Image (tube, rainbow, N blue to C red; front, side):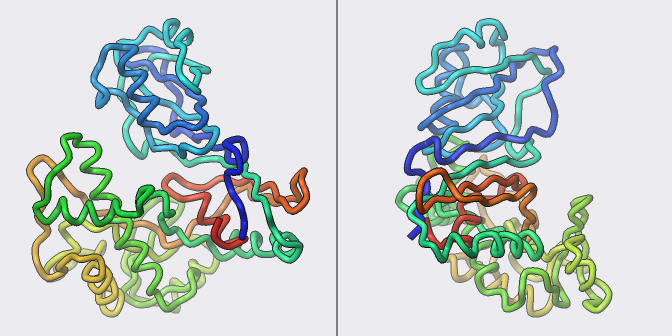
Length: 335
């Protein structure tokens, strides 16, 4: 079985930002390198240094704990020169610049990875290049990685209990995170039960145009199929919201139809949700629906023999929200 993260240096992640800080404003963007720590741990330490609430520190995405990662965080009222001199545990501020606004979740273009995978057989190493080329050509399944569901694997169940009247965490950010884990579980179930290849479409799919992010419902498979084969468009699955529950809304092109909608309803039920009843959420917790591509295309993907016997070195970039561990699983099996 492939082994990943033998040390944090085997798993390097660098955030690809949507934009650079402007140099002016009441927030300071800090480019932080961390090792063996979660993004939230570093955010709390920055909040203490700036004497602000942890919720006031912004970041675009949570980066892996067992890794060496680099990402932007935003801190209100922190002087950039002071930020550069902060002594953080297993982390350091490499750059600091002012910006008018807080950094929000999902405000990133993607992530670049450099990974070392160990304990590979000769057969696995020999076929890695061919398998990687196939993933680039046809698409990497865009499922959520196991780390999305917590160390105990119960984040989705905790999210379901939250939506069905269980105790709500005091931390609103944690509540949103648990609810999103349940959304991820539903998406993964839809992807798991899809009967078609990733580069194929069926009538009733909601497809995304990769260049623009625009959505449309597929009515003519013969017309749209070649666009999918060219990786111009892809079928999507649900990040569930209110529109996934109850009868379909007439004319809403963001909702699938036919067999596609039926499978998505079955996925909701499989995850403990009633697709025929309105979605109800606790006070103060808002859940918005979205569509997520069922596949993504790795960019600048290269695999080569590692420095040690039985190891491989992988480098690639993925869009925001996609998981490097899924690519490793597709290439070498579970790590």
